[in-house]
Amino acid sequence: MVNGKRVLIIIPAFNESGSIADVVGEVRGELPGVDVIVVDDGSADRTAAVAAAAGARVAKLPYNLGVGGAMRVGYRYARDHDYDVAIQIDADGQHDPRYVPKLVDLLDETDLVIGARFAGEGDYNVRGPRRWAMVMLSGVLSRVAHTKLTDTTSGFRAANRRVIDMFAAWYPVEYLGDTVETLVHTARRGYTIRQVPVAMRKRMAGTPSHSPAKAMIYLGRAFAVLTLALIRR
Amino acid sequence: MKLTLVTGLTGLILLATIVELLRRRQLREKYGMLWLGVLVIVIPLSLFPRLLDNVAELLGVASGVSLVLFLGIVFLLLVCVHLSWEVSHLEEETRTLAEDFALLRTEIDADRAARDELVRTDG
Ligand SMILES: Nc1nc2c(ncn2[C@@H]2O[C@H](COP(=O)(O)OP(=O)(O)OP(=O)(O)O)[C@@H](O)[C@H]2O)c(=O)[nH]1
Ligand SMILES: [Mg+2]
Image 1: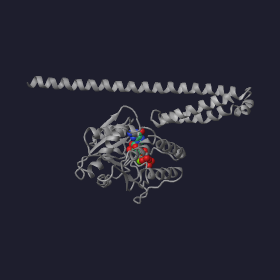
Image 2: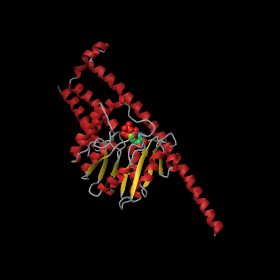
Image 3: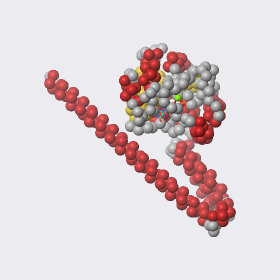
Image 4: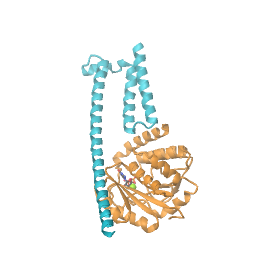
C-alpha cells in the first residue's frame, strides 16, 4: 500500500542478473507493502532465479518479446489481480524507487505519470543525434498530450486503473512503440499525462542497449515511429 | 499515355492500401516501412518508365523496362526468402510454446496427484 492504494511494480528485465537483485531489494526496502513482478523476457542468464530469490514474483517468458511484450504481461497481471496502480521501473537500477510515492500521489488527478530526466533534477546527459531525436519526440508529443514532456522514452511511469485496463488490452511490441506510441494512444483517448522530474542514476551492471554508432539510425526510426503513431488511430 | 495512367493508378492504389493497413494496425511497422520504401521507387517508375534507360544501357540491358522487370523479380524472390525465414522462426517459437505447455501440464498433474494422495492418506 502506498497512500492507501494497492501498487504493483513491474520490472521488465532482459539479461540483468547483475543488477536485478539489488533493484528488487531496494524497491522492497524503500516501499514496504508494494508487490513486485519481474518479467524475464527470455534472458539467457539467471535473471529469473536471482529475481525470485530477491523476493519478487517472476513471470518468465519462453522467448524474447521486447519491452512492450513484457510490459503487457505486467499490465495484465495488474488488471487480473485488481491493483490500483502499476509502475514500470527499469531493471538496471537507473530509477530511484524513492520517487514512487510522488508518482502515485499525482495519479489522483492524472491517468499516466512519467518520471522524466532532463526536467531539472539530476545530471543525465545525452548528445548528438540521440539528443535531436529526443528533442523532436518531446516537441511533438508535448503538443499531442497538451503538457510539457521532456523525456518521452523514459521507462519510469505510473498508470492508474483506467490506463492499466487499456494497456492490458493493447500494448505495442514494436520498436519504440512501448514509449512513443503508447503516449500518443493514451493522449488521443482522452487520458491525461503529466511528468515529474526525477534524477537518473548510472546503470548498476551490464551494458546499455544503445551504442553511439546506432544513434543516427535511432533518429530515423524515431521519426518513422512518430509519424506512424500520429497517422494511426 | 494510357499505359502511364494504368501503371500510375496501380501504384497509387497500392500506396493507399498500405497506408490504410498501417493506420488500422494490420501491418507491423517493419513490413509497412518495407512496402512504403518499395512504392517510393515504383511510383515514379510507373509514371516515367524511361527513367532507367540510361542505367540499363550502362549495364548492357536493352531497355529500362526490362531492367525494372528483372529487378522486380529479384526483389520478389528476396521477399519470398525472407517470409520463409520468418515462418521458420515462428515454427520454432510455437514449438517452444508447446513444450512449455506440456511441461506445465505435467507439473500441474504431479501436484494434483500429490494432493489427492495426501487427502487419501489423511482421510
Ligand atoms: N522485456 C525486455 N526488457 C528489455 C529488453 N531490452 C532491455 N530491456 C529492459 O529495459 C530496461 C531499459 O533498458 P536499457 O538498456 O537500460 O535502456 P535505456 O535505459 O533506455 O538506455 P540506457 O540509458 O543506455 O540505460 C531495462 O530494465 C532492461 O532490462 C528486452 O528485449 N525485453
Ligand atoms: Mg537504462
